[in-house]
Image (cartoon, rainbow over all chains, first blue to last red; front, side, top):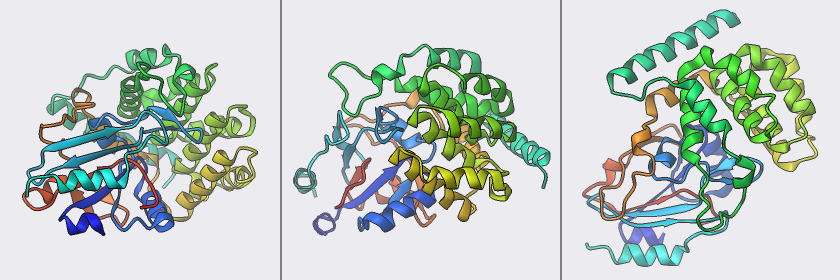
Amino acid sequence: MAFEAQGARLLTVVGQEPFRAAWWREKLRPGFPVLADPVVRVQGLYGVARQLVVHDEWVNVPAAFVIDRQGVLRQAHVGRGFNDRVTTEQLLDEVSALPR
Amino acid sequence: MNRRSLLGAAGAGVLSAWASRLLADAPAPDLPGALRRFVEVDWQKHAVMVKPPGAEPPWQLRLEAEYQAACAGEAAVAPLLDLSEHASPHVRGFAAQMLGVIGEPRAQDRLLSLLRDDPSALARNYAVEALSRLPSAPEDATVAAAIAATRRDANGNVAFSAQQAELRLQKRVPGGNALCEQWVAGYDPGRLGAARVAEPAPAFELADDRGEKVRLAGFQGRNPVVLLFQLADW
């Protein structure tokens, strides 16, 4: 995967229990871990929790954060709507631009 | 284990979690205030798939109410049962959600009637998930039948949630009590929305889909991390 070639690691967080994270991973096979955040603690920390109603449920806004090797947050993409998502290409560009 | 002793065990767990949070300078218990602030919001106005500019929902108030209800445990049951009959489907859905998280056996009849009679798909959606979280659910034929019937709900989202609720029962996922303790232990209102560009990314540790713990700090000094709060076909 192109991100791996840059030394980067992808993580995705769902606001659900581990058995549902496993269900999503099986269904979508993203190739990276699906982390379970059932009490939306991390979604809260990153300011994305419970902001839209999608599929008759209060869910997080789509978001992507780029964190450098030192653990510093470098890019924050927080969508306004369900389909307002940053592209894979842009995230790859941002990872490539991080200092080595 | 009977229902009473299950509830007792859950209550003790929540109490000890509360005690450790008090030592850690956690916010004071204020269930009535948190519920009042939550109910005063016009959630229907914010119930959108795309947020208009300048119209942020007060999501922090929902998290506060969830946290306070989880912390209060059994003391939250009576007010949540009241709220499960509120005029707003968002409030009814919230009440159902938290009755499931607390794992309250006395909520079973109310959740069954929400599931059967509530005109709002959102309220039915939270009710079916909550039913599957009750400690009694895996052994209760009435609950199993209600969840199975909900797989044919006219609303596809509710039918999908019923499928996931059946999966929870089949896999014997620990019920609401376990979630309740995580809520009590893990919430920090002073840190909501704490992520800032050019500052250290907020630390976390979460279980992955195989139950393995993943710590953000585990990548420090080695790998950049792209942290996604979205599922997509990557």
